[in-house]
Each structure stands twice: as structure tokens, then as C-alpha cells.
Image (cartoon, rainbow, N blue to C red; front, side, top):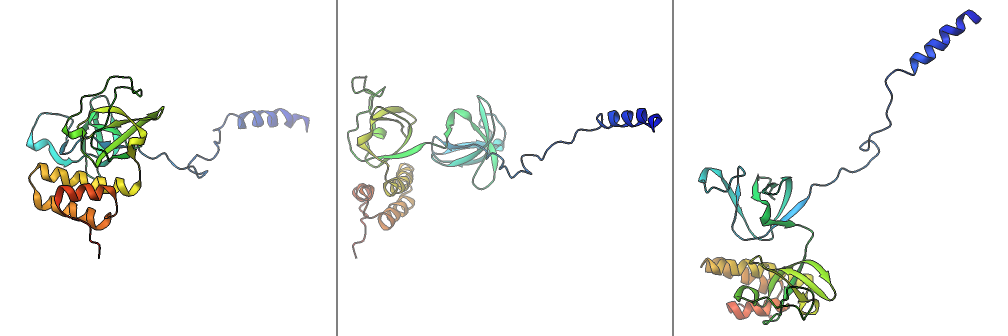
Length: 225
């Protein structure tokens, strides 16, 4: 019996040198993998490239995206972002033309908006242009502080606006998204397409304040029957 003891001790020691058994993986424990990051396109009619090159080569052109379209971020560096579009096509967009998708929407419903450089009414005002002074304008709110909202305009400019001068009502926002499309069609002189967007606003959101703005622009009013 005592002669076998060294052999048993040796076997026990050897058993401790074998492969270590790991616990169940996070996937096996039911943990959900993290979702890919999403981003929004900053501008209308932005070209998506097949390869990360800004040279205007027709062979490198994939498609066009508009402001507010949501994309999935696949790869990103300071210059280019590889994205997946809503139709599952993949291509490249310059990183500076994207913003995180977690921004909030707001609608400007007054004609003379005061836009400041900082969240303080004593800070310098930004010079307003036509694109920043249209009622029904859809803005992206990127930050809020001291009763002000930092907003990004469709022309890419950013500034601080008193929060009380904006609305975040979901109906107004939905109507403003259609109004933005209608105005883009008007700018391209595609009046039939613009009229279709104006009509949708009247039919879907006829009681909204944005619908009244759209009616003034187009002459298409909501049906009251």
C-alpha cells in the first residue's frame, strides 16, 4: 500500500498540469453582443463611394444618401467611415459628414430665430441666412445646457437656441421631415415630387403647425371633410 503512494501523488500532480477548463462564454450565459454603432448623414445628395477616395470617379460611385438617413458604422478613422445603408449596400462616406445617431430632433416654428455662439443670450449672435430662418425647419439637437439647445442646421452650421423657441413634438417632427424633403425637391425644380410630399403632410399631419407652414408654401391645405 505504501509503495503505491508516490505513484498516486505523481498522478495527482500531473492531473493539475492538464488543460484548464474555462467557464461558459458570455454568449453561452445569454449575454447579448453589442450592437454596431449608427450614424446620421449630415447633408443631402451625399455620394457614397465604393473605395475611400474623394476623387470624382464614376467607377467609384455607389449611390447617394440624404440628410437624416441612418447608416451602420462598420469601420471608421479620421478620414473615412465604411457604412452599411438601409438597403444593405456597403460603401464609404467621409467621416466629417456623419454625426452620431443619438441626436434629438426639434422643429423651428418661428421666422426670426436668435442663434448664439454659446448658451448665453449675451454671447455673439450668429449671422442668420435664408436656410436658417425658415419656419418648419428640422434641427438636430446635439446638446442642452442652461435652457439652451445646441442645434445643427441643414446647411451644417451649429449654434445655441433658447429651448422654448423649439418644439420636439413627435407629430411636428414627422411633418418637418417630410417638409424638408419637399423643399429639397423644390430646390431641384422637381415640382411634381415636391407636391407629393406637401400632399402627404396635409393628409397625415393636417392639424400640425408644420402643415400650416407647408400650406402657405404650396397651396395644398389639409382636407377638412
